[in-house]
Length: 381
Image (cartoon, rainbow, N blue to C red; front, side, top):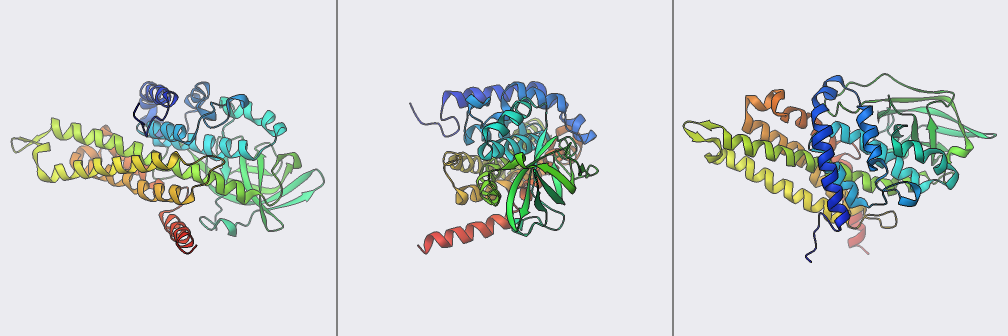
């Protein structure tokens, strides 16, 4: 049978059908309400846990779904067609915490954390960005000092998705100037989260600062060894970039659908809107860009796994795909005119949500820098 880039196996096809049904029946109806409220729908989040989605890349023997990067891309694309904010909260939990945690934890840590994060009982996230340090991760100022059976952490993390609701966070800190990963729980003494940070889009996921003031973390919550944090971080950044890129594809796909239907139902000057060359350009360019982004993202996903690194591919996928969601949403708004600017057709929300994908999980500029460096190194071998 012919190879299908988007569904390499029957399991992938079944996964898409299941997530599409869940998105249509459960995510779509609540999207406006939770965007306006600016909070995460915890009940829906736990339903995703019941479907096995919160551990999509965790092996079945550990309680997960045992699937791959392509499966993760499918879930993020489908959810983002309806509610990118909810998809972002899902990403912060299932990719930034669960996927990362599984690959750098020991059996005892997995026994303590996996059951509750896979069910959604505990919402999780990751603490990397700091108030003074974003893309320059190596410049982070959060420190950890060993004190008997504990580590004492001091610092602040900001723009942390799931910060207000989260119970446990994978936090990066420097032990003697070496980046190291820890699991920090809300009930660790000296831990607190700041006020919810208001934002332009992705409002169905909330974010806040994580504040570590002489925060006492058990040494049993050290992930891997001291100084291994940078390795964990780099490995996980690849699936993060891919899933963020997939979110942009989902946004673009939904916006294409909305503008094509609108242009064919609406008439102006006695003709269908779709018969005007200017409108045809918006639709055709948007469709072509969406398909190109989808093909690139899924092609790169084939070569990404815990054992297989592909920084060039994942940087390229996010660099190309991230602007597509924003640009296609903008085109859709132009086609819909005043209706697009109002809430009824969802385009204004999707446009607000799409912008984050050019910033979060690596700015466009960071992808350009990485690609130039990696491609130059490859060419000079």
